[in-house]
Amino acid sequence: MKTINRSAEPACIASQPQGQDWYTFMGTQCHDDLRQNLRQEQKGLCCYCELEVEDGDGHIEHMEPRSRNQARTYDYSNLAISCNGGQTEHCGHYKDNKSGHSWDAARFLPPHDPATVELFDYLLDGSVQAADKDQERASYLIAYLGLDCARLTDRRRAHARNLIDTLGAQPDQDVVDWLHQEYLQSDPNDRLKQFYSLSKQILEP
Image 1: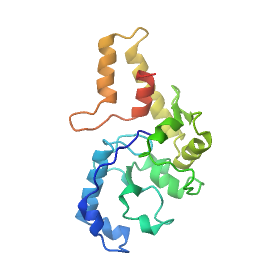
Image 2: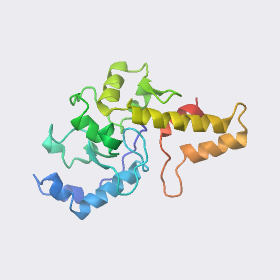
Image 3: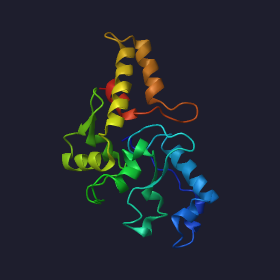
Image 4: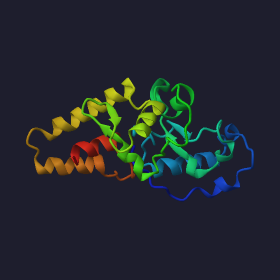
């Protein structure tokens, strides 16, 4: 997970009626503004797996599920953009419906916490594993979010292979500089390419 730097929440969030159903909110302009704000904040990446989330894709994610704490439904610190995880194989919808794991506030660390990025090691075969820092919490997050599913593993493997092939056995500095610009820097629309953390691990070992 790439660390997400919080921006100011849309002003309309604070004015939502108490007890308003989330599906009612989804039909409002404030929902659209919130979605755009979060996507900008995350530089176009899923908050969990770092796949690119295009316009119209993904959903506004409640990191602590609404079913667990209705009071945080409109709490900006609990909201992010998640991809839909293919056929619900990973990320937001997976964690709430199919993971087989329960919400655990003591073990869940949001991507907005800078410590989260230190929990995972990304391998060249596309797999992700718990780093030494906090293996229990990392293992929980990998399982709860489906970060080790075949869909993500295959895509990360292809991404790693592409970077390594481009680098070559004796990387030219111009190529290295281009890869840094292409995969570790935002584009003119302030978007990043998918799998930022894996790219960073390969390009800045």
